Amino acid sequence: MSLDLAKIRADFPGLSGNWHYLDSGATAQKPQAVIDACTRAMGEDYATVHRGVYARSANMTLAYEAARRKVAAFIGGQEQEIVFTRGATEAINLVAQSWGGANLKAGDRILLSVLEHHSNIVPWQMLREKTGVEIDICPLTEDGRIDLAAAERILTPAHKLVALAHVSNVLGSVLHVEHIVALAKNVGAKVLIDGCQAVPRLPVDVAALGCDFYAFSAHKLYGPTGIGALWAREEILQAMPPWQGGGSMIDRVTFERTTYAPAPTRFEAGTPAIIEAIGFGAAVDYVSALGLEAIHAHEAALVKCLRGELGAMNDVTLFGPEDSAGIVSFALDGVHPHDLGTILDEAGVAIRAGHHCAQPLMDHLGVPATARASFGLYSDDSDIAALLAGIERTKRIFG
Ligand SMILES: Cc1ncc(COP(=O)(O)O)c(C=O)c1O
Image (cartoon, rainbow, N blue to C red; front, top):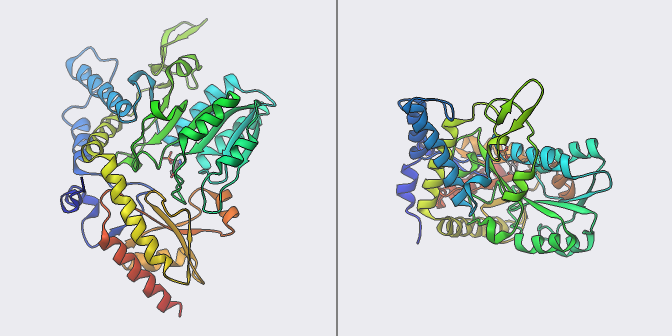
């Protein structure tokens, strides 16, 4: 079923005016349904969760936990396997500090890849500082995918964790998760998937994928900032020690000793992001109603069109594979991506220009930065036409 773009675009107040938003990979615009859910949660419905003895608080607790169930169902998980975090970054840090701190020791190895976002690099380097684990880097294929044949050669029984992006935020390359899971299981390693760019673009079912951890942020999924989720296999999560202490995450506190609540509560110290969680649930509802299959097909058609147009220009270098998911990174000869981004902005076209929090990938590509157009479920041909017109204008300006 194709998407009703006119209806969808009317749902997003952030798209009003003659503005072409091609930076959904950084953060997506919000539908009115999410804005309304947050407004109600902050207004007439507002109260704390998990503690109140009055009806409003009990209702808020129900809404907060309903959001957890929606998020779990959205990726094929169970509610007790979802920890609300501040975002994907915090989810990965949680795994590194809690699971990594408890299970990894000097000499154990972690496999990352060249294309990882800094949030799937730096937490592991911090763990390396603490524990002496070693980090290996899986290379990419010519067209910018994680090279699974190379991964197979690199992996040894010393590898305890493979942590990779499901979809690259720069190249849009899609990881064959089942394949890397099979390779990791052969050597007894756990698999963490950074699903930040995948959940808004592809149907995700953690049970079918077979991974152990899955991290993502709500704000790239048309939900609020300040919230995301860690999904972890239940037996792994229940065995993980808490990583932050405080209210809500305890069972019993005395000055001598504290015992902890079961997961996921044990990992949600302090008053949680109540409004944001409810907005997250509303975003999941919105996206689910449209269907990830339809969203994926829509974005794939846009990628094909844009790559076709840019590929026909002899002064444009395209990065990433043909079938990249929703993201097109490119360079225009003789024009710094920042200059291109600035000129496009004057024409009402918003792209991202920079290293995209993936500096090792920029080093690999041999560029300081790329220009990146990233689509959302509301993107359409007019956005591509405006981008192409802006590129032609930039070429004229730069002679
Ligand atoms: C692939 C990928 N991983 C992780 C992140 C970090 O997400 P957040 O900043 O929402 O924690 C991003 C955000 O750009 C991303 O694209």
